[in-house]
Length: 465
Ligand SMILES: *[C@@H]1O[C@H](CO)[C@@H](O)[C@H](O)[C@H]1NC(C)=O
Ligand SMILES: *[C@@H]1O[C@H](CO)[C@@H](O)[C@H](O)[C@H]1NC(C)=O
Ligand SMILES: *[C@@H]1O[C@H](CO)[C@@H](O)[C@H](O)[C@H]1NC(C)=O
Image (cartoon, rainbow, N blue to C red):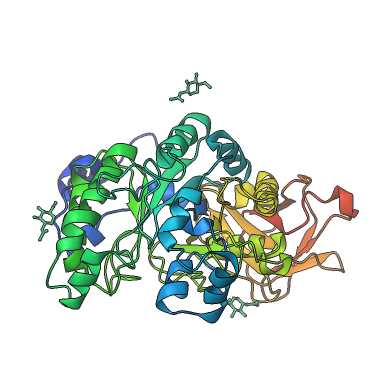
C-alpha cells in the first residue's frame, strides 16, 4: 500500500526520530580503552565476515628439515621424541644445531607473483603468513631479532615485504600476518617464565617492539596472534597493544584480530574466535569465528614425509568450507611451502580446485549470512546459507541423490512465488511442497561431464520461508 500523504502522527514521529534515536557515532571516531570490556565491544570490520575464505601459510626455518611438523625444534630437543632424534642422527653431523638450519633456508625459487596468482585462483579473499613462528625466526628484517631473520640469514630477502607488495598490487586479496607472541627457547622468555611472568623482559624488548614494527611497516589487515606460552594477557600487555591497534595504528579502521592474546583469552576475548585449531563446531555461534585447519592433516609446515592419504581430498575441503560458512565461520585453509619457496603441486591442485568450485558456487558462500537452520533435518550433508535482502536461501548439498530428487525438510515453499535453480545450471527446476513442510526438488538429469562441478552443488531457493 502506498499513501500520498503521511498522516500527521507519523509525520511528527518522523520529525522526532533524530531525537529518539541515539546518535550514530562515526566508526573512526570510536575510541577503545585498554580493557577487554572496551576492546571486545568493537565491531569487526564488515569485510572479514563477507570474505569467508582465506589461505594460511606456514613457512619458516622449520621448512628446512620439513620433517614431522613445524614443531620440529621442540620435538627434537625439548621432548626428544625418538623419531626426531633419529632423523637428526641419520642425516646431520652430531654437532648440528637448529640454528644451522637458518642458512639452509634459501627460498631460492620463491616468487611472490606465482604465489599470488595461485592464491587468487583459489577463490580466497585473504592470506595469513607466519611472519614469525615459535622458533623466533622473522620473515622480515626485524630490528629485534638479531641474525635470526630473513634479511640477515637464509633468503637474505624481506619475504613479508615481497608478498605484501604483490598481494596488494596483483590481487584483490587482503594481506594478513600471523605472529607468535612467545619463542620456545628465547633466553629472556625463559627467564621471565621462571619468575612466573613477574619479570616482563621478553614482551618489552622483543614481542611488543616487533608487533609495532610489523604493523607500521606492513600494515596487515589481519593480525593473527598465537603462542601465549602460558602467560596471561597482562604479561603481553595485549589490551594496551590492541587499544593502539584499534585507535592509532595505520590499519585501525580495517584490521581484524583473533582471540589468542594470553592464557585464558582464547574463545573469550579479542576479535574473531578461533577456539582451537581445526575448530568446526557444526552449530551456529553467537560470535564471529574462524576454522583454521590444514590440508596436510598432520602438520602446518611442509613435510617431506607426508603421503597422499595425509592430505585432505577436495571433497573433504569443500565440506569443511560449507559447514564452516553455514555456521557463521570463516575457513582459513593452511598450506606449507617448501624451503625453496615453492608451493608443492598437491597444495596447488587443492587450491585451484577450491577456486574452480567457488567460481560456480561462490554466490552461495561469499557475502552470505547464516539462515535459521544450518543444516537440513531430512537429508544429511545439506548446509544452508542465505541472502535475506535478495530473498535467497542456498541449500548446498554434498551428495547427489541417486533418485535425482532432493528432499529438504527445512525450507517452506510458497506456491507461485518460490523458484529453485542449481548454480552453474541456471534453468528453473521443478519442485513440490512436502506434506508437513519442506520441499522436494527435481534435479536436472545431467551426465557427469555436464555437472557444473563435482564436489558439492548449491540450489538457490528464491522466496522460501
Ligand atoms: C604494481 O604493478 C604494476 C603493473 O603490473 C607495476 O607497473 C608496478 O611497478 C607495481 N608496483 C609495485 C609496488 O610493485
Ligand atoms: C601497555 O601498552 C600501552 C599502549 O602502548 C602503554 O601505554 C602502556 O604503558 C603499556 N603497559 C605496560 C605495563 O607495558
Ligand atoms: C546437522 O548437523 C549436526 C551437527 O553437525 C548433526 O549433529 C546433525 O546430525 C545434522 N543433521 C542431519 C540431518 O544430518
